[in-house]
Length: 451
Image 1: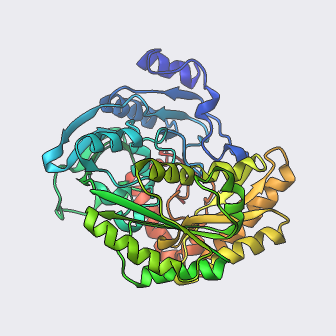
Image 2 (image 1 turned 30 degrees about the vertical axis):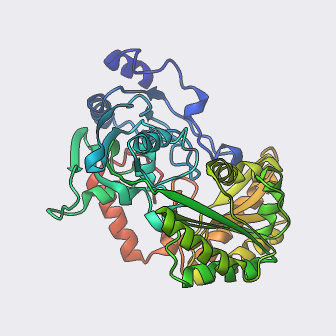
């Protein structure tokens, strides 16, 4: 019997798909040629069924690749054989307590639905990674996903007070919960957050919420070049203004995405800042931001009204797709550098592209020093793709040399496998491996990732 037929005999046709649909073999890295293989796809409906499937896989030495919305950019959901365990059917909102600013949701609930539920109750779930309609909260927690507003509010893990997860050899456990403080043991919750499914499979999460701000006010400024734009960013940061977002787009990114900008946009380096809070506070902060960025700006736009603000963020969410549309494919990495090395990293991204004969650009979360350094490719040109992978390798070396990290919010996944050793000392890498062995002694949870 095949692995799939054995699983179907044990769990039934309702849970085990007939064949392996192509959409379960790739994620958002597909355009760079990354596609895996699997023997079976299992879609449990409950956390208990997840535990039963994991127990069966552990008993039969079958690798397990957990999968959420498949929106990752590091190949974390790309299987290397064995069983794809999809969590899309775990869609229950187990509880929501608006007066206590919290909810518990299962792993398959989309990010957009979590934010909508919070908003409908006058609250805010601040983490805002991309592809909110497709990405699922389990994947957001498993990758500790970030986003534009992480500068003020932090990443997904900062809003998780507890998780339920299936760990080897198939046990359902809960750590943390509906509490704000817990130092009773090792921080197992935080180990599972960001582990990319290599230590266990998250089935639900307790999420902390915040009061929704009364008002928000973005400010967009255009500058001559990288040096001037980064000086404007430094003025905002150095002023101590509590901005909620501090973003940048280099001139090449602006050129490729300007057609869809809500108002006519000239050429240059773009800075996007947003403030939020009470109406009175926002009015004061917006004036301070306008002064900080306007000192040497070519132009400044401060949208008014919900429709204009929503249009601006829709445009920002679509920048990645606009850039990719030029050639049909891209290799984009999420390196992080200290803020004071940001301009250097932006310029070096372009230089790396030139060395490898590739069009290059970058954009990202400037306040966090997080660049989405990108090389454009024809996805059907294997030589071009290989040059882009070599260029990405130079990016990782650049990040480490500047005192940064090879990944800020996408994780290591399969794309960056083996790169951790460039960033950490051997003793730290050994501790990392020891944690993996303690949680997953057979090495069956998402093999080949997070290493």
